[in-house]
Length: 321
Image (cartoon, helix red, strand yellow):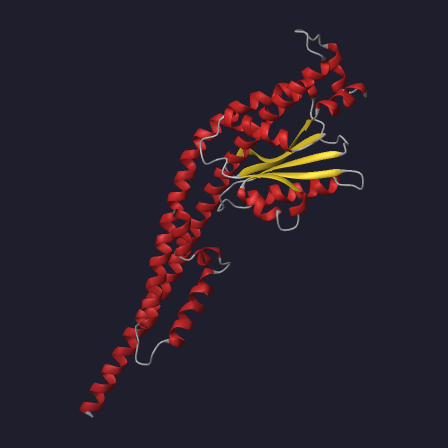
């Protein structure tokens, strides 16, 4: 409702590079179309603009406070979730440069806007990653989480989108919800490498575009045979009667759910921080705009009073003369 009210009050004035020019042009256009003999039309228009800007400022301040209250809770959960995927990095390492045939890019964005360029950043990184992983004998697909990423990528990459999921943040995020989502993704796409693109939370005003890679069990076995970090898997003893392929299968599924859970929380935390910054900037812009409108209103009212005084004095002079 706050976003609808913000659009209704005239969001274009806040987003204008020079709000004074936008207001002045609106005032002049209304003056040109006003009927003859209506002197107070300009002051009335400016007064309406001032009322609209005040309402917008109230909305943006309220949205900033809501984002700040949500950020505190999400930030704690985000910091706690980082301990889930770190053991996998210590065991398997992170291999973003691995060359495989089937790549799936999981792009995590938000469902709502008014949060700066956080979603555009994820989409740009995903498109650049798509160009790097695509090839004549390779297959690259998108899995999109969030309405904003879906809207941007569907314009020129509709054929490459395998799955879209929206409204994942409608309810408070938990591991059970994300693990079910991860299971649906694994069932609907074939992959050698899952590349998760998200914004890692650094501070309220800073977020880092990040790519995490999760390999399929087959790709893990190939990399293990080739040596390197994954070659250390053979040093571990497997208990319980399971084969190495079964262990790797379970490990890949659990790793993906843990990494996805942390990525969704990191992106949600970055979104709230970006929304706080955007709403704070909008509130300050509204305050500056209100100062300009107040000055314009006072000048217009003073000019109208001066004109009336001149007319009264001129009329009195004509009668006494």
